[in-house]
Image (cartoon, rainbow, N blue to C red; front, side):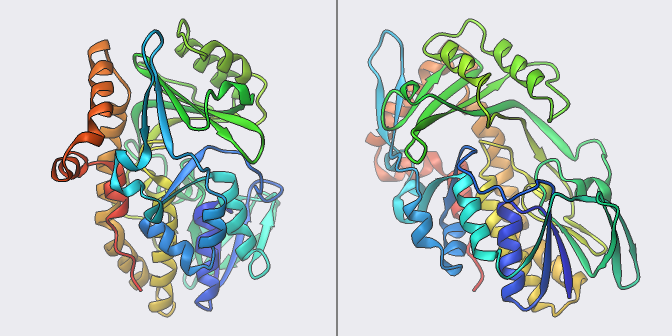
Length: 398
């Protein structure tokens, strides 16, 4: 059974690995001309169920070895004392045996290394058209070739071409949550400590953390802004101008971060948006990870969802012995509630995490200082509706 997987990122690599392990024949097509085996991208989180998938792939040890080693958060308050807190004190789900923070680029590298010798990869090409007929899907590629596959699986992210070709651009599929995200490398001296340093403005949050593997640091800017943002996600200059305007007049080291942004060769920008579909398959085409149900970059745990959903989909296809209608139904049934819980938590994380006023900022600071001192029952109840709790709650099928 030949299955075309669009995307060689996290979801696509996990999906290809498990399809091959189950005796199916995946082919991965990726728009970039070479594997994305670099240290770029921001730090991403693998919570308990994703770590279990990684362990079943034999990658737990290298993944833990590559972890960022950032175990504490420092909240900077110019003119006041810095608030410091261990991540484990924020929520039990951050405990080391149930959570790993790793640079996205390192995770992609490890996953690609696990699958590259067993699965055909076609770099520098992409799906241009799809036409389903009885028994397969005729796929046209940007390279001009046409080929037939039994199934096509979209693992091509928030701006998925497979989703667009299958479901169109209907209103409401992409739901903007009101925020934006920018990530880029900066000089190491702008990371003020060996931890994640956070500065809260009004409607904007900035974080900087050191990257021990490169000797640099990474800046993450998450902010709200009314009105439409840049529409072309390839137009870097417009995106950088938008970020600079959004942080105009902010203090701390923000001016230095903005200057460094314009020289970064790994600048990433996107809206904090969710993908909302009632179904993640149509005919012989299915979606996995952000392509089908992105919960929102930086706030929704998309990496854990990508890993888990790819594992579940590959397993469902294997158990259905090639019957894609049975497999897609089982896949949706198994992860539907999990996706909904994570998707519901993400808007709250964005709304509560970015102060909308000075009072909101003061309340967030007070809560951060109080949280480690709460009794266990109060701590659990307060965080039971959070993203990390939702991401950790899925029980992976054997």
